[in-house]
Amino acid sequence: ENQVEHSPHFLGPQQGDVASMSCTYSVSRFNNLQWYRQNTGMGPKHLLSMYSAGYEKQKGRLNATLLKNGSSLYITAVQPEDSATYFCGGADGLTFGKGTHLIIQP
Amino acid sequence: DGGITQSPKYLFRKEGQNVTLSCEQNLNHDAMYWYRQDPGQGLRLIYYSQIVNDFQKGDIAEGYSVSREKKESFPLTVTSAQKNPTAFYLCASARTLGELFFGEGSRLTVL
Image (cartoon, rainbow over all chains, first blue to last red; front, side, top):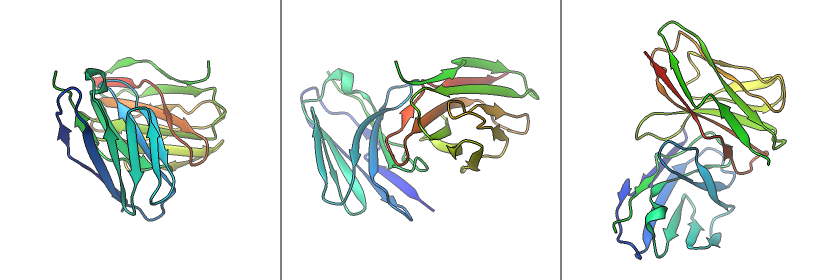
């Protein structure tokens, strides 16, 4: 059974800090990985696509690395508007983790 | 503007009633998905379709039904057989193995 786990479950950095989170997965067939962000009561929005182990991607204040069995996501200089739930999933759309709940302390 | 639209945003249902949630996309995507999300939980796959007139069950398909008669549309019916239907429902579409585009969700409450 495919599983996606996130760490940590909750994260509360101070404004201006770096937020660091990760997901690990066991999938029977891996076809790239996607990171999403979801605000409460709204639909998720795509952040980044990751294609192969060792792949790194930067988009604005977001930095992500794809590992052999997971991915790390870093958000630099976090702002209150970054507060949301961040989760990853395979590109097949079948399995997602519960995500990391990020709340920025003022 | 291209996008994916879910309706209604809020829906109330009495026990024993079937309800249908609408999902329409104009992105020309082949794949469409329905997920259920409960408070504090991740997305759980109900049904998905990779091509018109074909769909597959996800992890929690019991008590739900779908159709895919048109590429643009993938309605979800929550039947009276679904024992705990109160939840937030999300529809998504994608090119094959591409990023998912989500709707803004439909919140169903059973009275």
